Length: 278
Image (cartoon, rainbow, N blue to C red; front, side, top):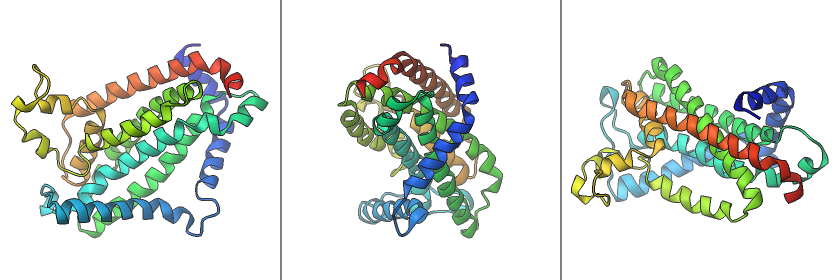
């Protein structure tokens, strides 16, 4: 099947997709006393920990933002919320087929709907968290409302990027169960290779001669990470009050399209024997 045919198949099953998303949202905090409040408590608790460790103890200084803004928690949240969404979408998405093995074996439906619904449910939480962050900026006297449409566009782009990775990993994880453990290790490395808890200026300040590649400076290698474009672009608009450079955004867009195409192609190739493998 072509990519267009796969999209049409998902579109024809949109009612089922909506129901799957609702199921994901209902089950996310089912049985907890605080419910959806955990979607705010978790990033705030993480922010408090990182602020103590990196801002107070290690004295990592955030750059000065729009209107003289100088706040490590706000600087951190601009990147942390996007990273938390990616982690939830990818690491949760990679196990969604295994978690729904009984459903897959009982009836036929487009299997990718399970992955899409998981990413969509994580995106709803992402929207809520970013909405709260926008409100916090307004409380601090920083008018970020003009940037919200562009930030929303980047959030959707990040969701598509995460969907491509989740499609790829979810189906591969059915055949090779060690994948989840490798991904968990890789995500830890990826986190520290992305300017979330520190400003990118710390990387740009490293001399090119310290690169471990002979022909590429360290900053160039660093910016091959697509999450750099996503995190820095959101931070530029919300924290810096400026339009991000076009280069990182276009690179993130290209990487997103490749991620979706590869993830969907691998999923289509391997989904035929899912019921037997599960």
